[in-house]
Structure formats: structure tokens, C-alpha cells
Length: 194
Ligand SMILES: N[C@@H](CCC(=O)N[C@@H](CS)C(=O)NCC(=O)O)C(=O)O
Image (tube, rainbow, N blue to C red; front, side, top):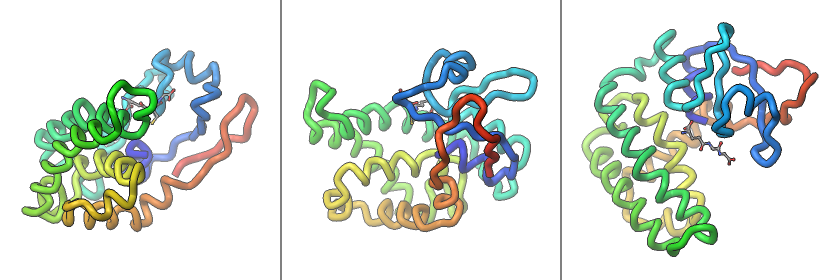
């Protein structure tokens, strides 16, 4: 989702191949043996298989909303999201597959959420009063966290974070990236995004 958000704001048209993770096409694995999405294959054959790098690839070509402002702070916060928050989020989402309880992973995840709440109490967005790459790269993960137990999230003491998240979820650019596409298969008609 975050890769799509950046491609969309940069207004770069790509060919989109929707993948069902339970049935990964051989073409995906041939492009990137990691077997994760997203994967961007460039016309010269270069492969970009980290969502954060795809965001940078798009914004370095066209950044009409100046998402790349404060980029060193953004990189630091996105790193904390990806390395610290994301593993706790996965434990919280899929606790039955993990050794500890959902509550423990949620508490671990809250360390990062408290950091975001603190920042959002100072500014409208994570790094300033303007949307940056940090907001766009991180809110899809906070959305996943919120959806694990919506009632818990709604009653938790994160007023700024809740408000920040709900603004993104109602925005047209997010609704557009959440649109469903039929899974790609060899020979399927070409589907463009955005
Ligand atoms: N570091 C990668 C992680 C991507 C990732 O974990 N993607 C998930 C889906 S959101 C995935 O492809 N999982 C592989 C699977 O479930 O088989 C990135 O951000 O690009």
C-alpha cells in the first residue's frame, strides 16, 4: 500500500500485477526470490523489492507534495517502524503462530505508538505540520495495528494518533490504493496503476 501511495502521488504509471500470496506466480519468484510483495521490475530489468525503496524510486522522479522533506528524520522513523514496530505488529496480528501472547506483542508495539503519539501532539503530522514520507510509509502499519482489535484501539489513550490515522483512512488517495484488482496470471490483460 505504501509503495502504491508513492507511485500514485508521483503520478508514474506502472503495470500492476496483483498477487495472491498463497499462490505466488513463478514470474514473481523469478524477479525476486524473497517471495514478498511489492516487487518493482524496471524496463532495464533492475528489480526493486523493498516497498521503501519503491517509494524513493517514485518520489525521486516526481515529488509534487514534497514528501521527501525532512528525509533523514523520516528514514530514521521508518527504520524504527520496519525493524521494531513491524515484528511486534506481526506477533499481535498472528499471535497463534508466535510464542508469546497477543497482549505482550501489543505492549511491545505500543512503545513505537507512544513515540508517534508524542510527535503528533507537537505537530499535525509525524515530522512537521506537513505530510512527509514518514507519515505515508507508517500509517498503513498503524492501520493494521488498529484493525486487530478496533474496540481496544478506539478506547486507547492515543487521541492524536487516532485522529491522524482516521484522516488518512478517509482520504481519496488511500481509498484509491485500496481498490481491489483481479489476481494477475500469465496472459491476463495489462492492468495499469494509477
Ligand atoms: N520488507 C518488505 C516486506 C514486505 C512484506 O513482508 N510483504 C508481505 C505482504 S504485506 C509479504 O509479501 N509476505 C509474504 C507472504 O506472506 O508470503 C517490504 O516492505 O517491501
